[in-house]
Length: 284
Length: 155
Ligand SMILES: Cc1cc2nc3c(=O)[nH]c(=O)nc-3n(C[C@H](O)[C@H](O)[C@H](O)COP(=O)(O)OP(=O)(O)OC[C@H]3O[C@@H](n4cnc5c(N)ncnc54)[C@H](O)[C@@H]3O)c2cc1C
Ligand code: FES
Ligand code: FES
Image 1 (cartoon, rainbow over the protein chains, first blue to last red):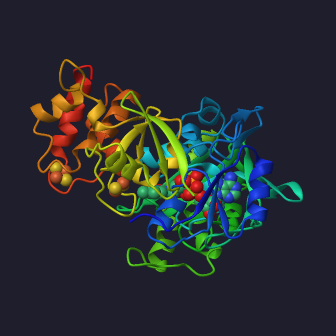
Image 2: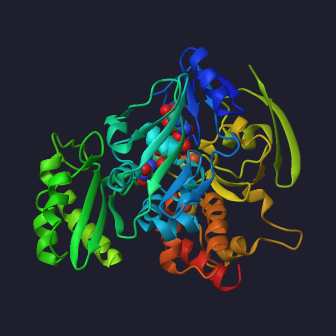
């Protein structure tokens, strides 16, 4: 089906996009359109106007200063997966982008759109949490940065105001990271996705962070499991013991026809164990 | 309000005034008159509408025509040259890579990108690359075989 009628505006700059969003009633941004257009085709979304930010210059750049990556909001999943700076500095992020959807989806979908949409089955949110990323957004009141841990509020809900535009994401580089997902066989979204970061000092785990999506309405950090791994070697036994603590992170696991909440919570433990092992091997 | 869209389709400049809600697949089929690009679903999942937009495989049912303004689009009709079928098309012919043929244009357009990115694509690479294309007839075996063979023959 085709979408219901709407007005179309193409913004030439972020300032113009903010201005249009603030002045037009019921307007929505469109970037890659790969969450919004499917929803509009099903008439689940019927915005009165679309503000297309897809051509704003400079918004798809990816750069690195060695410590962190700055990824423009319009960077497609393909460009994040392929960028040498991402593959080298933060292999987990490249792995996450490559795990999204399919070739065609990755060629159009953008990191800014994925974060703003905040689908519980989206892949990026877990990685953003585990890596301690910061989202930069511009609104009527100017620019602000939002920590990933404050950004995801609830199912399809973020800390963004209605007229705020994500311009970039700053992601700290981390060698010891891995993202593994249990892919829904039809939709390809994550039934469960686990992003694990491990930092070693000597032979011991000095730092650890675990982000999990797919189980609850928003992606969460499994702090208890991460803390359980710190302060000793990343042995198989210690990893298994840490992964056994992930359940603490889930207030209310959500189920659907494909996977019950209980099954998702179980999978989260299994994938945490696997992701931690890969992350620790990469860190070493 | 209508918007002017100027794009190149299979090397030919085209210009239309369209409603913003017009999808690229409908522009190609109803305005340009190229019906090789099929529409097989309402959920952006089947890939039968795949075309190349500025050289990249995209699902044309999930791109607004206004978003394709200024772009170069290649459809299945644009692949064959004066000297006959494109090597991937020929390989589908040789390897019986289709049954009803509905998914075939999308499969072939996606295959162009798969082999662009990895010319020596293996069976596993091709299966992974076809994640976004659904076939209801073949069971995929001969589709994969066709693409691997086209790659092995230097595309
Ligand atoms: C078949 C299919 C399979 C998919 N599989 C997966 C998958 O496995 N994993 C996964 O993570 N995702 C998946 N996706 C979703 C895909 O990754 C989307 O591209 C992504 O969720 C949204 O990015 P977009 O640029 O397309 O955003 P759009 O659809 O353009 O926008 C989405 C929402 O974000 C808002 N928005 C967009 N950009 C900004 C911005 N810069 N600032 C503020 N708000 C903004 C829009 O207003 C809209 O509300 C799939 C999509 C499809 C169609
Ligand atoms: S018609 Fe485009 S993906 Fe099915
Ligand atoms: S050949 Fe019939 S759908 Fe693929």
